[in-house]
Amino acid sequence: MGTEKLVVIGGNAAGMTAATKARRLNHRLQIKVFEKGPYVSYAS
Image (cartoon, rainbow, N blue to C red; front, side):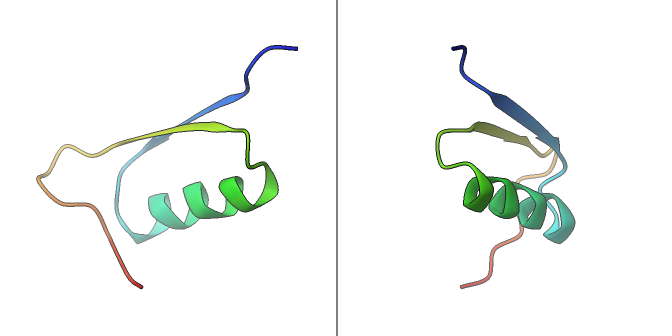
């Protein structure tokens, strides 16, 4: 079985929420987030 991968374009709140939801659904998923600016959205 191959490794599942997800690419998220945009590190704003919506992009990071999508990556977090995907991680919760599949902890083996390989996730890459691309953001053109110097910062990504973060909230604890």
